[in-house]
Image (tube, rainbow, N blue to C red):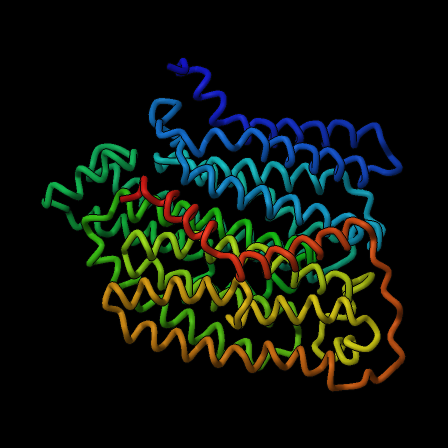
Length: 481
């Protein structure tokens, strides 16, 4: 029998290692003026690798820690993997980006790591106070990273918008938690689950649940809480935009699923209908708005909104297979979207001047490897086999059909078909149109080449051999049901 202190230490060790790595990156950056980016990146990568190594024991745990504030289980293990993957890939993509922009910012990697710590406590939280603390910890770092470009007014504007709207949504989340505490007398998910199972649920508790839904809806960029997404994604540095679109979204959906399935499972009929409407609105608006975009970062921003709608379909299903589909979808989406933003970072060059679709004309001829990688990512986003995106959509839609949500799946399939237009428009410009001026040669750094290689191989491998990862996702959601 393993002593409880050792279990607790092993359970929080991944987050502890990332926090220590963040502190080291910040402290060493004070003494290393030249090469601070390289030092910070190396520390961050070492921290991510060590955290991945010590994360495995969580898969076999099924306990709680810190007076029932966090859960140490396979669900936490799975989302820790997603967060660490997203952080590691973002570090690799950011190294060349910071050098190209002439930014010697050691704080960049420290903030990235501290945000990851917030995410890891958010996904393991089984107490609304712990989830809120994790949410705010990840948000503060991302707010700053969004406005990290010192000479970009667009970056500063995006950071301020994100801060103001984020603070508003956090206030709604906290007020919802207060109403639930007033009704149930506890903020623990287990305690509130007992209250909702009792059958005598007050109107105040229903309002509190609705306010939590609004708070989560903002973080996952679901319509109508999406208004911040296009401007923030466009103004933020490209690597941070990619990190927000995958890491923050994964952490938010992890807490979203845990709270609503584990705590409000008995009220699934009530919130399921609301999520049905939100999923439809999110899929339709996200895809329709993406069609008319000429800026690729804004196009991918609306695409990210649409993908939040597809993930909500899995939540609407309300079954274990639907929840497992959400986990698999997020795994596939992390590699797909970070790979796409790696290409955007490469093409953008210094100052991110090349962010319009016309800037991709002739990329297939001038940089065939880069164009091929981007095509694979776009195929995956569109849900075309044999990529991971296809299996992700198939799994979620299958779960929704099994649960009886046929019309929701029909809308999802139609909007997914519409998305092919704007994804293929980029591919057509890369291969079928000539550039207006002779394109500059792009230089691949080792870190960027490694990141692109990982993402391309992962998108294809997870799509061709999905069984192992679907089984892991199915195993990880058992604690929610």
